[in-house]
Length: 120
Image (tube, rainbow, N blue to C red):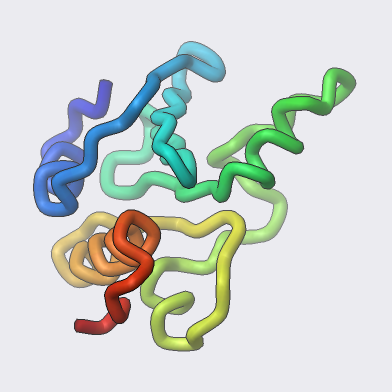
């Protein structure tokens, strides 16, 4: 499971409990939640990726090609960019450094508790 200090702090800060865990490969863990996935790569110390359920399910159903879930062809927007723009994101980079941790928390809390305003 998530072992890096920043990642553990993020899970504790958001008070999130995943409903499932499986490995995409030796490096990548996928944590399953009711409405989304978090993808964790052992080589990425201070970030995880949010995937909405439809996007990740579609990527995983492609039997011919299994793209990397953390080495993306086009950089994913960060939680900060999504919150400030008000746009939705299907894949979002949750940066967990001290500057961006609260944006990541607010982004995830917006999906855990959609009735709350993301910036409150």
